Image (cartoon, rainbow, N blue to C red; front, side, top):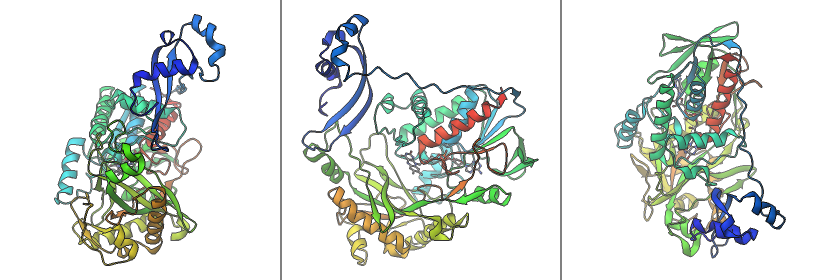
Length: 521
Ligand SMILES: Cc1cc2nc3c(=O)[nH]c(=O)nc-3n(C[C@H](O)[C@H](O)[C@H](O)COP(=O)(O)OP(=O)(O)OC[C@H]3O[C@@H](n4cnc5c(N)ncnc54)[C@H](O)[C@@H]3O)c2cc1C
């Protein structure tokens, strides 16, 4: 359908395609919608839609449209298997990010006793800590972009794209809609909700868990585990309080370096895994719109344009990450003395700049392969960026032209960096290892061949983009339990099994189902 046509014309298009009389087509409903802008003179929305026709019309016309129309697939059913053993103690879910929230929600909605513990603070208090940090008020190591109600993605673009093929992904979208996300996320091929809406949704999910009998505790950090005969029997929180449990769902996220180290010291198997680091680039959104939509740039039906680009630097991958149209680069530190970037946008995606990470793949073998080699590498470059920026969470940044030419960094010109508390023109080679610096430069050159203007001289690079995924994996067996400790279910991004909001939520649900399959509520 031409992008500027009204959705109500779907019925006429279906009629033309199937040669069914328009009046026998009813209940037209779009089920998927994606944008095809490959031909900038003929930008189209591609729809899959369902509709009803009565049996009489179906029998009369079926031979004609057999190739265009398929029967709507049945909704996938997730088996609800319940165990026989009465649940002896609550399930402790550690972390209120998407993995932990969806694990706790699944358990509570099936009547199981569950306590969700979160080291950070509830959303309103967290928002104040984050605002204070962004305006120069100092970092709260327990309440920031990575820690607190909703987890890491709460201050994000809220992109809900996922490459995993799991029926639960649909359920995640439906649950988000139930708690306040817009209906369109179940239809759009590249759905997003924006940080403003997402904050409300995660808060509503937490309230629902409490309404269903679950207990939610903030400012409550997992600091140890009690084990008996190779099985976890209690969680230790805030150093001295023991919470008895029948299982622990460990949904830590990737920033909980202290907790990773505590678990490793007590014998939980943790290994290094590949990850990626780099910088965040900002262009005017209008440049991206023009490159993607040509003369239709800025049309309200098209919104702010996106991109996703990949390339090679030697034998390594370099790619854009977490592109935020009409958004902001955000300070995402969770440890003192470290500078970290990421991106977010509001539902309207109407800010001046587009941003994305440009990241280069790092393998454990590059760093010696020890379990924490990736964590140590991240810490090193985050501290280098902190020092380079001047030691007050100002981020080092550089114009693309200076970065590519190796020139002394000049002030920013037509692109104003959005990172708060602020940016300082710096030579980014001073905080990026050679492989990463060369990889980012190769990436910019390669991406400019795919997207006109990507290498615009005034575009700004801000360092460092280091928290793209967990550099470790908490190993688990085929039953989802930690390899060396029964009853411990590592899930989500921090455990190395998810890479985004939806996949983390799905992984959390799966762990909950495994526990439900053992116990009776
Ligand atoms: C700024 C930003 C933008 C992003 N944008 C997107 C996006 O648009 N789309 C997308 O799909 N993904 C995005 N991501 C990634 C996404 O947020 C993560 O993949 C996702 O949140 C991982 O979910 P999780 O539940 O596994 O972990 P997290 O969301 O990290 O949650 C883990 C939680 O555990 C808590 N915790 C840690 N240690 C302890 C402990 N010892 N005791 C108690 N609690 C603990 C933390 O405080 C945290 O709240 C973004 C991330 C950031 C930082």
